[in-house]
Length: 129
Image (cartoon, rainbow, N blue to C red; front, side, top):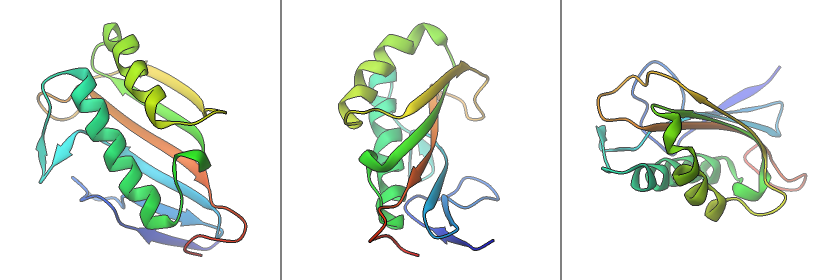
């Protein structure tokens, strides 16, 4: 198996922001609402925008975009925030939208309301690999 790390965000731990595997599969690590290592945004809508901007940076670093995403996982500190998160999320992903799972969890940083990871498939003629 071949895999290459990609950048786009600053990891908060011992992981890569993203990995391209086998030349076409882009795995984006969970992205939080972080700017310069600090949780940013007071509302779920603000944090979701920051998270998706961070996801975009990793995707772009790999040569992909939101249209290439096939699967997302969304982690919410409070599942009551689902519809507000979903309203922002829908603005980023074109049709057909990726498969998605959303779960409620205890997130690792104080004030963190949402984290999103995803898998994308690079276009056959482009990308980093």
